[in-house]
Length: 327
Length: 180
Image (cartoon, chains in turn cyan, red):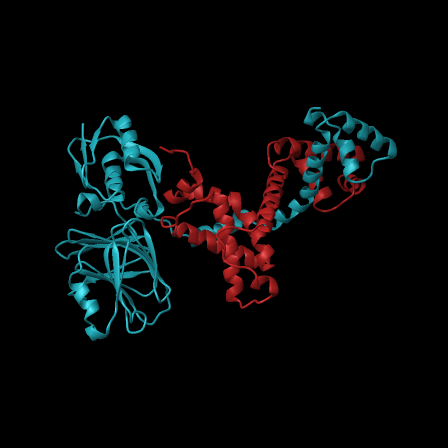
């Protein structure tokens, strides 16, 4: 029988145990004549019973509670106006990540601040996969592939200093008396409790802050520094000039989330993100004007490039550590 | 390319406020009622879920969601409830047995299924025609008898019965295909 043609008044009487004997018998005869009727009856009974329990949703003020949540959310607006001279492969990295290349002055600074001969050194290296490092103070550091982290065994006692080589996402526990310092290249990032990332290449450091506030300064000149707040990105350029801008790029942490999202993104910008994700040096040898809207989740480079080849008619060469783009 | 796969997760990560509000409206009420099961206080449950939604938006770029958004939301709220209970040093026996989990246990899964159904039913009731909705709510939410409703609304008992059966028919139709 059609669900819509069922005798709902009779059914409700049954559900409320108000059916007279003759009504009950008539109804039971109907059920017996329909193979799926018993299941349907059980389904309707469930809906009827739960419709009484649905009352509890009346006590939720959805619109009011959304206003409360919305008022507490800080919405990031894309900056878009200020372009900072950054190496192509890094130009769209934002927000919460720190990358350090080279164990320079910071290495010396961290490892020699106490008696060198009595200190053990711990090194974590992410060789094949993104690695999560749990620090003695409860902070958590995610290392991108090819990155490493160094700290001393008195971390959390006399200091909270680490050296990062490569790229990392830091979730630093707050409320600690010691500042948390990350030495990377020729810069130092200092925080008390926050979430941020650092990326450094060719002398340019980019720090992106997801939560809290961090200070970025040249490692040899703490008088020159910038405060980077939540949803901002700070840069130290090769000449040690400090810059700050609002906004965090959506693909900044794709290396951790394994998700690349493009929404009407200029193809050259998308290629920058893709090259960074796969740790390739990008070389664009053709004019690229197309825009791309797509989502790639945990997909290999070859698969992504196949798709882009079809969309834009480009030719890609991924030989060695490069990603070359031609018509 | 997966342009439309995990659309909710993509919307979340994009930072689109309208999409985030839609996500909030879809899950918030059920999540609050889910949290009440653990913290036993609706105002505390509201605070926990609101805090979670604020944090989720702030951390949207760094979180890695490898399950459905629904599973992620319920699991996160469950863990937030456990954190809350631990912070409040509540040591009732049932709390001691609760741990931060990556997967929810069978009881929690059943509770989520029931809440899903109730939430869906509530949403459908809210979309019923005005008179039908009023009568159905008086019957199901306020526990009034059909005779009482008829008197209060100056209607015949038969009209009341018709409206209630109409509501049930609409619910049954709209819930076709919904796992019950």
